[in-house]
Length: 438
Image (tube, rainbow, N blue to C red; front, side, top):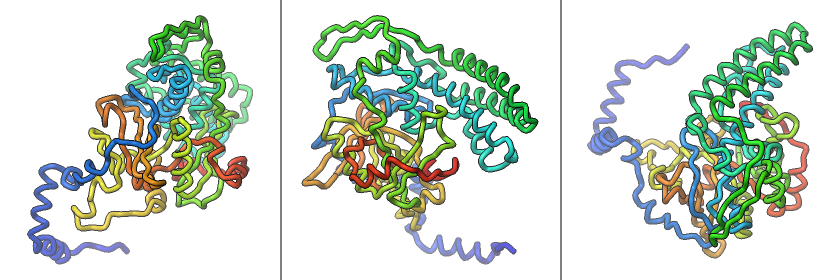
């Protein structure tokens, strides 16, 4: 039997609210300007200085616009910083559309794999619904981006420029998602009937149609291109007729993505364990999404050490929490909503993950850190939201925000302890597709 509110209780609530004149003052401010503006902590701007003791050479930023490609942008930003340092060309950029194209093809193929593998499950089962809900979506993980790079290489941004549908993915994503869901019903029926030979022919037709749709929406990727650029010293460079993989291996052959480990801080999971998410891979057989879950101080120290060695750090976070997009602030005390409402709204990081109040929603790159005798004060963050957000596209993040809202960083194995290196080599505990780390 449920609990029913009585009219007397509602009268009591109203009386309790109105007995304090301060509630009326706060209510007027919140109703006029919105709860976030009313709870905004102006002192933050005095504490986030944008001066960093360690800072990489950066200039322009990229812009993912109205798309969920942050994981691809952040990974390519790490790669372009590597290229920029090596070839003295800090504003060189890679084509995000190129990798976006191949992700759609590969992800459709793996979607069909998952649908066929779960054909014996009810259509409304949790695993089948999860795959159907993800059909046509943009979001992804670090290893998904590196798997695409390793298989298909990279091209300069001018070799496959951004298109409307790459910048604004909702329309194409809806059409592609609808097609994949329709295909799923056909493949499930064939699998349930035991028609495995027919499945091969049908899925090949389906994949050809996905290719057609993606080529129409985004454009076909180039098979060869000429590498042409001027470095920071205005020297001209030309290398003709490169394939995307030749470009990757010739100019960035020293980048070994197998040397990276994703350190996670998910306190709703047991620490010092390697976890994997097999139901979210985009490339069959080669992409393995894995995290080594450790206390937050290991993410901090590994990130600092990698920055001091001159390399940016890919990190996954919950950018919608305690952030000012326009000013580029990430501060755990930015909006004091508990004070505004007079209600304790604070939750632990573990509880936010357990309840879905917190989740990995965005990926960016750390390009600087400010330390005072080993104490981390703040971080410089390269975002992919264009120059009109933050300080010409760069955000500043205090370390408390890092502790509360950063969930993973991609760092080299050499920054791990020997025990962590052993753990990172497996075996991994498989997580379901709906896990909080997903």
